[in-house]
Length: 297
Image (cartoon, rainbow, N blue to C red; front, side, top):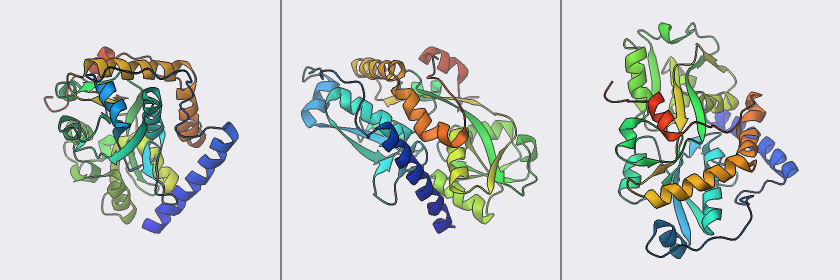
């Protein structure tokens, strides 16, 4: 199954390269132009500028948001390029490290990374441990199954085995929406893809855009049922880094306004799903109202 999966990923990458070449969209270009502001040495931005790099935690196995290109061994995707825009605004190079669902918050807390851009839903539980940027993407929870499955929605998951990532919001969501399902918790979504392909699990549940990446890799899979949740993504920032959050929010606002967000969506998502989208205008406070709790409810 692994070779089959990578063939589809290579095809995805080839299409993306053609679109990028046609649009003149080079990674790290930034698109915003202008002079890079120099920050005082005692600020987080100044420290990053002094180091010459910003360390960003991203997914390595979740196309189209963050995945390692098997042809170049480089990490690519929507989240990766968004991180590149922040690096450009600071005038430094981005360094990407793998951040799976279960270690994203610890990586911020122990200083392993400066930022997390790893399909992370904004929730009040997480906001109590770290800070979040304003929302930069809105996903929705769905269910993915093989095309010959008799599962049509969440109501059919009783007695079935469902894969999701350890530390994701779905660990709790499924316990609430499908309490009689048997959860298979894994470290990464690539493991879920292999498990559903081999029949070791009956379904996968996570964000629709992550599941769409699986379908691109294996079109014998399909989404079923209604949207289960609303998942506003935010950039994770270490708790108390108020000035850094304001800086990141400013970069996000520019990216949404100058067309770069739309270019990223069209390149990494729209061309495969046929969907149209505009940058989210949801505020952080509104996102927190949508996802008031995970572990406590």
